[in-house]
Length: 220
Image (tube, rainbow, N blue to C red; front, side, top):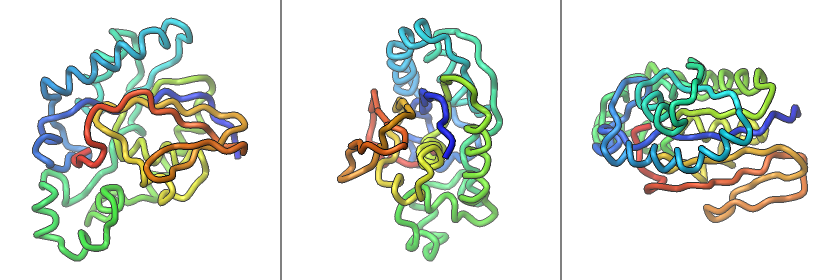
């Protein structure tokens, strides 16, 4: 498996639809005041990293990620990357989690996680397509890089970069405005009981250096 460069991954701050438990997918919803606060916290974390490493920065085209990036990167230039858009959740987009359960009970009953649910959405993107575009992006990276994007996409970044099945990584969803660092070398990061530990294998270590909210909140 190819060793990818180090990645600093930032998830966008809370949005209005996050607060309503409404699925965004590739629809738009603005950051709340709390979400803006989240982005400023990320800026505090990222400032010394940006100064020390001068990494290229790539950002999802969706408005919530763009707003987060302008704050979290402290005005540093970045490139908009379409491959970082959140998974398209088809007919689930715009619905609340409760509305999905009521209107699509069979799909909801079979989904163990939000990633399962969103990728099973009728007329949605599906997991295979999401994984393929994430992996293609990772393979294009040539140096330590900052990515600003979304929670479900972030789970697939971790799974793809480690060459693990997605079920190994669904155990640790990303909290609102979470920040993580994926670093390749002689470590493998795994999940047990919701916590990461490392083994001496040729896999990336993953360090979360910020958690802001309940990691099980929906509406990526």
